[in-house]
Length: 394
Image 1 (cartoon, rainbow, N blue to C red):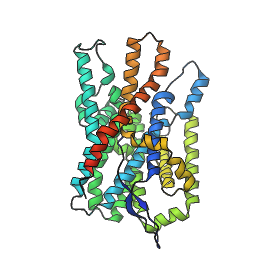
Image 2 (tube, rainbow, N blue to C red; image 1 turned 135 degrees about the horizontal axis):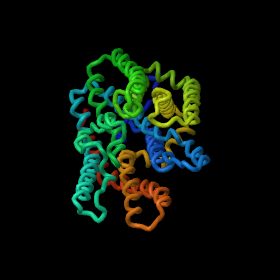
Image 3 (tube, one colour; image 1 turned 120 degrees about the horizontal axis):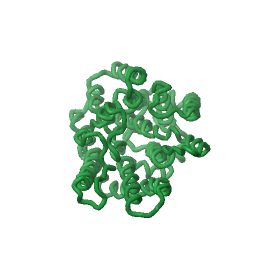
Image 4 (cartoon, rainbow, N blue to C red; image 1 turned 180 degrees about the vertical axis):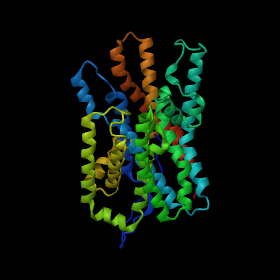
């Protein structure tokens, strides 16, 4: 998932509450990022498993049935932070150039480095240059050009399944980059009232589009998961939060009516628990995509709660482990599935370990490897690029 390590705004005490007024980093949001990547890692290591002959184990694993929704939390956070940056700089003469240059510096170097390395590994295996033959773990049914152009989600929707092997997780990066092709133009050219109407319209339209596809398309359940218009409500909810906290009236209401925010979060949380208990299969569509709406609203409330939290909750979110994971979330997200599949691939071919042991221990080893590589990448590769990107001023 796209890293969100931008400077964001935080409230300053004034005589009259004036919303967000200064640019500072909010550590609690790093904690939320850490939670988001933790959910994704748990999904790919533990909760995605299916123990056919062990109903009790399946029931236990079902507790984390919605851990795949860590991506939805990333979407909400991304919409909030990127939307906020655009709102704060909408009148800048260097609005477009600075935004896209900073975005390119942060997202593209690591992304294309990883994609090129995967392409080289796949080609090497295909030409017999490795002792393991074809290395299909790096290649699915999606053409390479879709991965290089960040359009793989469109191809996946047509195929009705993930089509990029270890790079399949990049569908969410494609959604974000496609969303941010249009958002800067709407923020720049629409007045505040019309922008608010448009954002609310997107939030309302996405669930309807999901329901239509699920009802009328053979692979509609999967298309509703990976197409940008179908997932734009989570990103738009983040943008809506960014709009509201910049309005003194609504920011003041959030601060003085925290109990109502807590009640809304609890009600949505009950909905999330109910969906978890029912164990609806992903992409099956029995709720016609309503689960995505519930999750996006729930995570939006969590986000607002983090912004207005007291010291106890802020202390929990600012936990060093969570904030550290949050700071390397982009690299970890991009690398973890590659590392998991590579470790399993090598263990099966190079060790006498039983297959069961490989598939139980391989994902954990892969995640550890991904976190280690992402940590090094952040320090020596990504962080210098982020500093360079910050030299471009609005």
